[in-house]
Length: 253
Ligand code: ADP
Ligand code: MG
Image (cartoon, rainbow, N blue to C red; front, side, top):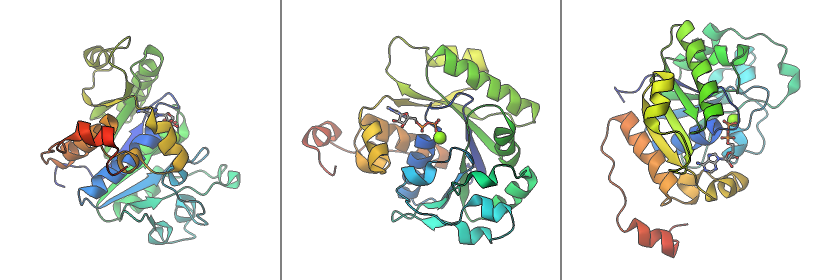
């Protein structure tokens, strides 16, 4: 894991572009590749990472560690796949508390392996918290002008905080009637490191609370997540054999 930074923050500017989906699927893909990874829900007001991973009840969460009421290790839940999750306690009562990014960083730095943080939308205080606490910033966007404009804004905020984003991931690409990767790179001054296609099964996988890489392991989007996970780890990824037939026959669905 030498090529991977310790704490990776996933941001977007615009909401609903696929941050939580990205974090849950990348977490799962990295776990499949034997990486030690913890995904953290820092979307404190509209948290749903735990839910996307099939966690229904989590009496403790990130806020309890930030408050000092709980050791951070006791806020980690382990998914049957081995992926570790620190959910966010869905309680509005926590919202008013101001949180120090240095505290967040020091808590997460103490964990084993790599940490990937799912963040809230927008450019506000909660997003700055993540930008200040992480070592590496990945920006998710859709290939549309509105999403890319907001991606650029969050990139600017990140730069002002001295954290140059390492890459953009284009999510929900359909390959036509959309901005091209080079155009997005030119607009933002950050390279595109991955392209995840639009996948009709994504909605269903979110509904079923099983990340797509597990729900439809041979779909184009799942393979794109795995390729990106392999790139992050600096390992070669070989596409599974007879993938078209497996897709059609629904093998291992
Ligand atoms: P964010 O965390 O940025 O607000 P989410 O990850 O919750 O966004 O994604 C919003 C919705 O977009 C999801 O419920 C999912 O249905 C849909 N979605 C995300 N990625 C894709 C994709 N690659 N293909 C199709 N739908 C997607
Ligand atoms: Mg989200």
